[in-house]
Amino acid sequence: MLSALGYHRSVLAVVRRVDEPAWTALHGGPEGSLDDVLLRNAYRLESDAHPVVFRAGQRAARALELDEDIDYFQVSGDPNAAYLHQAGKAVILFQGALLDRLDEDELTAVIGHELAHRLLWQAEDGGYLAVDRLFDAAMGDARTPSQYLETHRRWSLATELFADRGALTACGDLSTTIRALLKLETGLSTADPAAYLRQAESLDLRSGSRGNTHPEAVGRAWALKKWSDGEDVEALITGPLDVDAPDLLDAELLRALSRDFAAAVAQTEGLRTDAVAAAAAGFDDTQMPIARSERAVRFDEPLTVRPVDGAPVPPPRPLAAATTRYLCYLLLDLATADPEAGDEGLIASLAIARRSGLTGYADIADDELGWSDKQRSKLVQAAGVAG
Image (tube, rainbow, N blue to C red):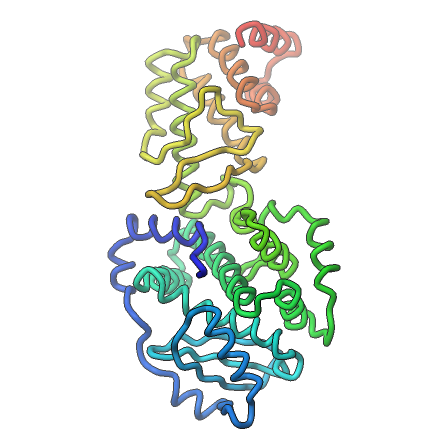
């Protein structure tokens, strides 16, 4: 049986905690009916005239263990398919010449993709549907914080990956699923799934999708292959930990990372002063923990974190260049928080940067503080001895 992605479960946990009134207000089943609108503006497919559609739909519903009626409608436009959420039944809307382009197996995959949306909205007593409604409402408000906008983007990507898993589950064949995806995306009447997977492997897709509502098709094919092989694919959703574009989860993680790093800096010999401790205390505004390690955290390696609110353990996250630069500036701010620490504090900070993998720290400190070549050489040499 399909299960929501770890990203879905983590976002649901955070939204229920930080925005429970909005989540509660939007929690509930689908309201109203689109029947009148559809009957007036679309062509309803019936089983006698379109047996292939109904056979494909029955096959997809059985595979997904969905025991509900399904209505199918057709409208004009570019080839596509969409799921319409209504009470008591699933509604799938076909657009353009899509049905003429797909064979029955491929159509089973497409219908499975759309029905998977219904499975997700029904899961957790409608919890994921409530979060989706919250994001949709937030997108229409100019006051919505950027963290919600980025969470909505990643949420949409995760939802499409979940639906793609529904497509694969429905038809039972990876090549068929990818071929259907390619026909829909490219307009081709035939496509080579194996070649497309080779194309996917030539890209660094763990760097994250640039898509706004759907991952790029090549990323979706890659994710299907990795998922069928039992590998984690959520890096396609999240990418590196980027201080310039955090979602709700990353914002909490970055606050925790800042807090823990600042606390470690303030406990370092040469920086253990009241002024530095006071500056470091300003970052202590969250209880979300970074996973502890016997050795010092290195920021040039993927960061391991504990899950949010008991959600699944996320995979280690590499840090974006902007994030390591931010950590360099955090370290420099603390190193200069107490003028009386002088060179001893700077030497201690250079040693911390070396141990932590913040290779750009010396250059940033030099640019900001205007060291002479002689002064920099002296400080760096002393830090090597101290570290």
